[in-house]
Image 1 (spheres, one colour):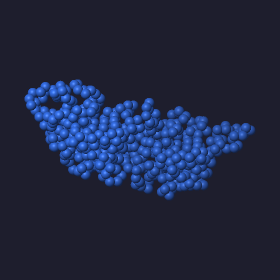
Image 2 (cartoon, helix red, strand yellow):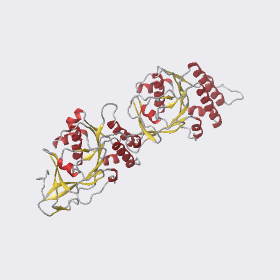
Image 3 (tube, one colour):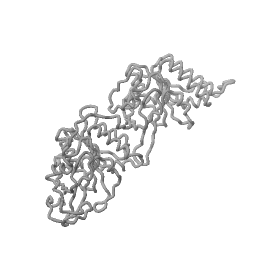
Length: 508
């Protein structure tokens, strides 16, 4: 499959393809819709069919192609109102509004031996054909098939009318979108078999949070499209589509090597630093210093000229910056310079696929260099933000593989339940990461202290020691010598076996 187009830029298509006006959707369709065919756009009311159809016609107008919107279900004024909400003008599009004829509405109207529906269907079809012949459009939208279905009343008659319309439009070399709101509740597989391609739009409402919309290309003859569901939003300006991420489609050569934190003891603990393109899990109880540790890596990246992106679920951007400053880490300076971007994620507003695309836009922006370090803080917030979504861990794994293939170092923060003793992991994510850094509280001489250790590193050797971790206002993140004279540190109740060095008084 061809890779989807991430950035909102023009997608180059050949003469045999009709752009939908949406770069991401064109990417899903491997460049656009094969021209001079008939397509079915189906979805419940409010799913976004009209918006997609108008984008399609406006893109044609931009390319110098004449477009026509044939409406049986909405008035011209309603269409123009929809367009105004997106900042569009429909002056370049022919709008043909089909209403029941005045004759058919008269009480004394009669049709001799014919059923009224047969006459109305015949009149409607004839009117459409005459208008198309008069205007000779290249792109046509027919809204909607539910009205044709009601007029036909008979499945066989309905199918014959659609077949006749298809043949007429294809002969005139039109690219046509047939909109269907599926209000009949009938099986439309027969209709899907007639058209060249089918795009299904869905509109769902979770128990909590914003509504969700997604699309799926059901079929597209002769096109190796990207299958599966793709999320989208309706924003001012049209559909914002978030293609499903497939890591195997993305590779980039990068220079391998270690990334240093700027804290020599921490780098030594990690065997000389973390690796470019690696995924790193930072695990520990609340308040032990996980976010501060990842912030240290973000600042180090900015100081060596690499961009970094932080996605935070559990605190505000202002709180993160102020807390970093209190520990002597000037994150604000790098945010203001643009070397670091911090995005506060609203847990009720984002879908997993949309979040993956947001991360991709930070790593592969439309202009300029992308982020080389990505922080997700925290994985708990990511999982709890989308409780009704399935396969979240699999989608996260796909995203980590994608980042690794681009040479981006990723950090996942996981907060364990509990403070000392036996702690509970909310999700078993250790298998996702190349490196696992474990943080713990322990008590010594009546004071609460912190310990740090590396329990896994796929990309090379690391120390198997346990060191003390300290967060201070004058030194930020500090790491001490190995705690060789303690036993039971990870359990939170160590036994002192000697006079091993500590960093000094606790920050408590």
